[in-house]
Image 1 (cartoon, rainbow over the protein chains, first blue to last red):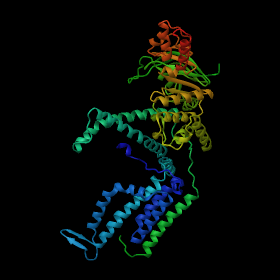
Image 2 (cartoon, rainbow over the protein chains, first blue to last red):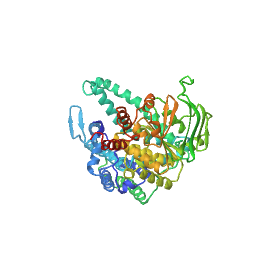
Image 3 (cartoon, rainbow over the protein chains, first blue to last red):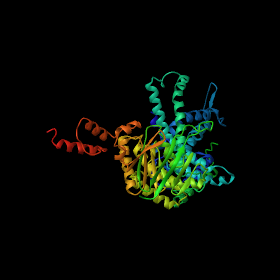
Image 4 (cartoon, rainbow over the protein chains, first blue to last red):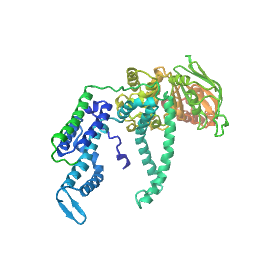
Length: 276
Length: 290
């Protein structure tokens, strides 16, 4: 059950989105989010839906995978759309009114567009640009390079990036270990699957403590092994993969900027069905 | 004999306890040399000090007394500069017991690149080294894989590649086969042998006698003292002595020794299983049981 968890969610591939520089994709996803937050009416949202579908096509990511990325958000979306549906005060006649609940036309629009479509697009877009098409190591490389100007004010950028890499590296190891410890405790009669919330939480304690201890052991051993391989901090360290901007980056960057501009233009010149 | 690569002269080592006082010596007056291209096995029971010995040769620890010379650099108990430590670690690489605890990156080739990156090499040079190191351990096909999806033996081979990429003159294997399945163990031993043939000095710390006999020379450590130093044949000549050190005799040699006790006349040392089989077959064909 535990081994089902796939972290990082990276799907290796050879598409243009995969080949693009992680820096482009990180900055690009910020532009993408800006575009979504700028969108004010149905047409702008429609445009962004089309744009996201195009991104998925460029990245060779199937719709089913995208659907999987938003499935866990179902309840959040439901609650958000409920709140928008009931709390929005419209200008016209209420569509429906009973007990203390009144529903306006604007409420429906907001529930659909603002909570559902916007959040779905945000999650899909950032998955497409970042997690699905960028390997964790590229992502950390990108973040490290983007933040490297902060080194001048003594922010330990390299150390953070190294910590992130190691954390990502050890997630599967620790999951495996959790599984092993749980099995060992089960063999001694531990029960993880019955009882109330508090009882279950208590049952996890004999799993967490050995896990905690062993992760310290991992850390100590890894530190020694790193030292043996001449690790001495970020100073004087070079990179195997040097990040390089290519033609693909120009196109992806341009496409995102155009999308942002298009959303602003649509907001301005098609002011019908404004929901915000 | 080739040039001396690592030399220990009357090395003593004792760990410090929490109060900073030295506990009983883990290593007592140890002197020996590792030569370029040599294949050495260090054996000893648990807690005999063999791992401490490995840690000294890689400067994870420094001798409490005596002198250690690695590639011409003298090391005593005086504090060392960072440069000296790096220089030594470039020359002497180390592969540990737990393959999981020595892989740093989430992709095999990135992990192999970790060492060269620390040495400040150019990206082209790193790429060359990653390629040749993975080739040497036969893991080229797995360059893009995530380490956690590999078997224990494969992970350990990646760890070896990571050390090889620093182009050391000697690799120390600190019980690197202990956590592996038989297949993984076989792979690692084969890799060691191949590296040795390419001129790399190998120091293999182990408590599996069947692995130790693959070496050219065996050092036996017992309670911090170097009690034996010779070829596998020399070391295992007297099984009783080896048993005294809390070690086992290789199965072949043990079998042959027992047969001899029963009056069966078998020639040779029979350290390796195939030697043993051959000698026994030769004996059977000799006609005694016909």
